[in-house]
Image (cartoon, rainbow, N blue to C red; front, side):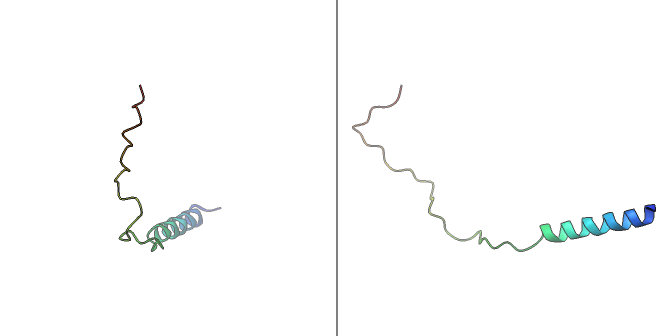
Length: 50
């Protein structure tokens, strides 16, 4: 296989992978999630672990 053909194939593979990585995702990053970062209050009857 000649170097020119090899380099052309590698350049094509690199181009396809770059375009695939820049594709639009189906996930909406601005959508609210259930996890608000607030934990449930601790029941006072429980003793802390030692």
